[in-house]
Amino acid sequence: MWGIGASRGVGGSSIGCVSSFVRYFSRKRAENLRKINPKVPPQEASSIARSLYDIVKQHGPLSVSNAWIHAKDSGISGLNSKTHMKLMLKWMRGRKMLKLLCNHVGSSKKFFLSLPEEAKN
Image (cartoon, rainbow, N blue to C red; front, top):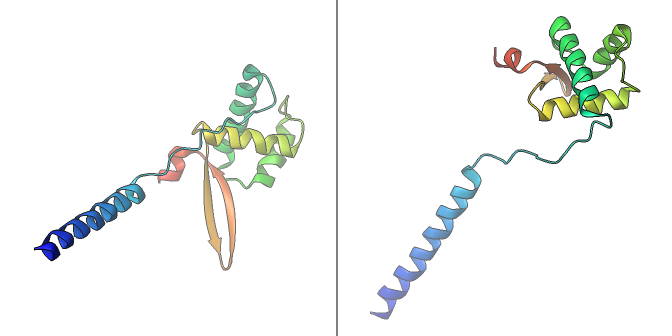
């Protein structure tokens, strides 16, 4: 009698523990809502973002260094440096304007910036 009750209690709690464990890990990861500061006023940030978006749209998937070359050639006002452009690209990815694609080449990886609608295809 004691053994039956004890085994039910232990078994029930371990099943509950496993089910909560499965429920916890089956959820999608929360979005990173950390605020990324583009270091420029919001109006200027949106105009820089629009220009970078147009560059990626025109030239297809680009690496960060190729995006910097195109940004310098187009003369985007407000971009101070390559580091500032990387910060803006991260800000744009947080707002779902860009996607980052990973391309495996042998043992190395190459990352490309793309539009979200291009990444689905």
